Image (tube, rainbow, N blue to C red):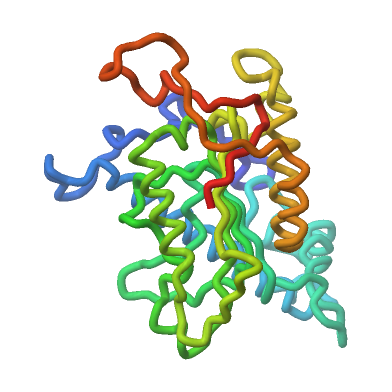
Length: 318
């Protein structure tokens, strides 16, 4: 694996390069044995939120700029890519300059894209908790104009209970009210049968349903949050891994899960009516649990249980 920080220069990663950091792999200054075991994950989560915030705001700034006639007048110093197009010496890089200019406004015209309204966020697992804006000490961030968020099998343990509120910049809500983003939570079977974790997820939905400003409109027809479980879905079922690498346990049902996830997500972004019509076309089951095998009453775990149903069936919790 290699990256290219400078054109023409290949810098291979060292063998010590880590694809996945565990808490014990990281050293925290002034760390004690009683520190929260999720300290690293909490900091990583804040970094991910900051990345999303900066990516959205910087891209919005880019498309609001006026494209310059001369390449060396383009101001792209804060925009970086891993393998190009490059953001320096643009007067010598006509192709790179053309790329950056293609996103900017033409003279006398409006932006080619709109980033100031109707932004949608989607995250899986750890990324499912990146909907709120970052909260860095001594700094405030205005909420992004997110109208819909889709959280796929979210992992909540690094989050403080009962989970994130729709907007964390609470004091700005009444001064500049905006609708709470609608939230769709799609859970795998195992994460729903993980009782402690699922209890926290239900608490999050309760928080999300509460009014968050005095002027916030309430709509009975479209609830602010929906929570569904996909029977037989695994944590990896929310990616295309089972289709790209069609072998191993669960690969057979990968296309079924992706079809259901795509239908639910697409209709959720359209309207509440579209979402209800999609649900009506799926096989919705009641929440009924059975044991995978004959085990003692006090010896079972969440992995020894399963929902009654077939791959792709749906349970509606909220």
